[in-house]
Amino acid sequence: MTNTLHVVPVNDLTDHDTSTTEPDCLCGPEVRPTAQDDGTVGWLLVHHSLDGWERATG
Image (cartoon, rainbow, N blue to C red):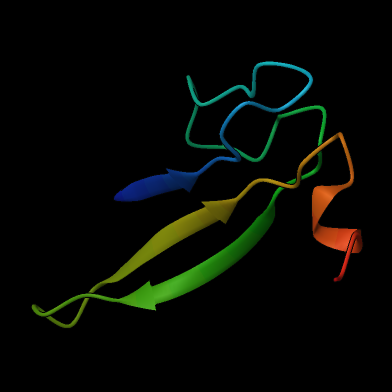
């Protein structure tokens, strides 16, 4: 993958692996294709929290 950006939870229980353009992190990030202004496709890797905060709804 090229043109890759990572979206990572802040203050999670562990550090997330953003050192690669592949979804190799322990959390199993979701890979989303994103259209670029020049017509190419980039990739957004959305990492999942390991502390489960997104499941807590108020």
